[in-house]
Image 1: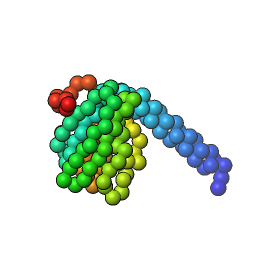
Image 2 (image 1 turned 180 degrees about the horizontal axis):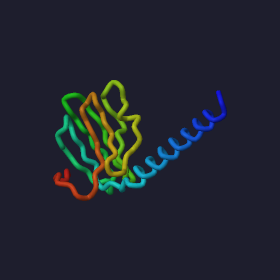
Image 3 (image 1 turned 120 degrees about the vertical axis):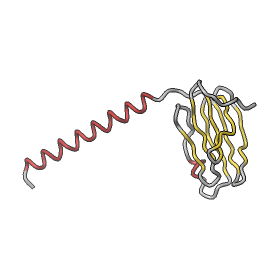
Image 4 (image 1 turned 90 degrees about the vertical axis):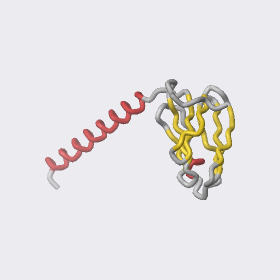
Length: 122
């Protein structure tokens, strides 16, 4: 391998890494803190909970059950009846646009900002 080709490869890799880092920073810095956890079951909005109130909610569907815990401004699925448990292993979310998804139970928890047209659940 000649030195010119090696130098070009190193420069190309460095540029790709730099661009990736810039995109990652732009995406993560653009995320705003969320205000609510919007719960959907099978694509239908069923509840919305403020992240400012610590609570534990049981989300029951015909496919199974999930336990949503909101604590310290973050939403987390701590238990689920699904066989794979991927939703339980996802990290807690608190930024607008972040989600926790339980495919077997068809439950999605999405963090949204202050402006929402969904009625608050009690």
